[in-house]
Length: 154
Image 1 (spheres, rainbow, N blue to C red):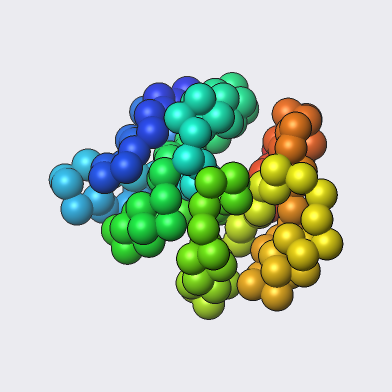
Image 2 (cartoon, rainbow, N blue to C red; image 1 turned 30 degrees about the vertical axis):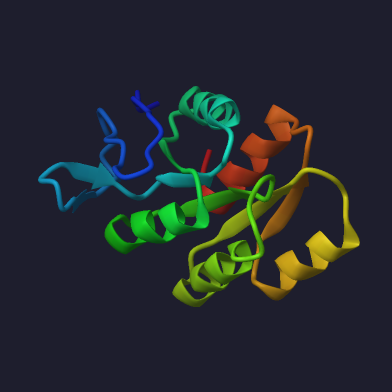
């Protein structure tokens, strides 16, 4: 298992420490290198929730970086290749669906996290290409199973 260091970002990215033999380094504009084969981007308005999600993934050797808005999502995607995006709809406006459409078009898998069960959320998520919808409160085992399944491993 790869040890990782995570931190949230609004205008920067985290760097993974250590790697396994099958991972490839990608250049980062700041001169650092980011390992993208298992890099997860979490779009989450709440810093506390972002820290919890990053911690759960880090325990499994999965690096996660954070964005606090749809604009931050687009900024990070413009300079960093990610393997998966988790998008918490809480506190985000309707522009989130534009971000989802960008992900779908780019072929980046994403999962929507909804604050409640809603047929409208399931429908909009499917229309915009989400690979799934998780409903809060999240079960860590379920989250990890979904993430690992989409990352194709473990």
